[in-house]
Length: 344
Ligand SMILES: [Mn+2]
Image (cartoon, rainbow, N blue to C red; front, side, top):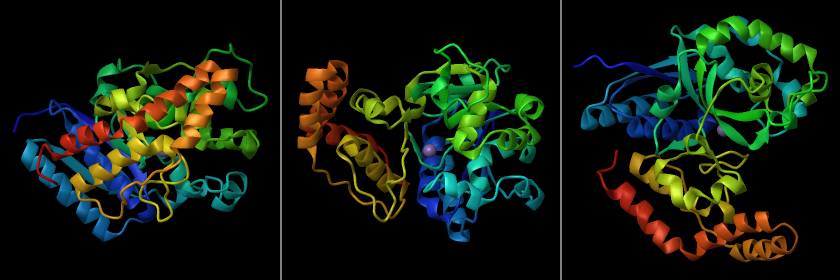
């Protein structure tokens, strides 16, 4: 086979996130350009052998059907590396419901776990339709990071007290899908620096773990790419899904995940959850229920009231209820997309 440039992709999960990991890895491999080969590193937070072999088996299917090349390795951080980080109980106290162990720092630990000068890190709550190669193609081989602006938009909203004031327009990125320049990290944001950051700021000032740390060290100095590359499913960004989902990588932020036992689709996630469910069927990932939604009345009421006080905000809700009103059409587009080829 021809030698292709290799793109390194890393992710991390425990067994509770197994369906999400399967989706993230399989959909990223399937959707990313065949001009590259892909080397996956999975930081293993306690995955079962079944999950690991299922992942390999399905990557093999995609690889042989679509003539794509990949490698897959599972990694576990050393006890020494884990022991430097705050204990899970400490973190759980400040951030109830969030991932609270070394898993939260996985992308920062990567610099010491793999060779090479860069990696695209993806959370295990994403579904790629647009592919990840855009991150690589946007990178100049110098910048510390390539990322998408978070719906929160500006760094001042997640700036720990005591750090120098910044101009209000410094962009803030979402760390769920990022290209990391590992050489830069080894030099300027090593694990020793991460630990120092954790010790010099009170835990309640580090609202989003690694995302807070990376943003506040980088101070806006990174390459921003279009938000479709990491379409964070906030109410605002999700309103645009109807037009852009086929080019997007969807990011299912929030506590309730599409594979969760108690997951209920909210009215602003109907299309996103429908895409996830259909994709799960395509990739043969079990445990995801078909989304059912009601509550479109609530969206219409919000659109009405916002129209009186905040007309710009009203537009977001208007887009959402139009998505409901045209749902049959969207549904058939999604069905067509995932029916175009035999299931994995
Ligand atoms: Mn995430």
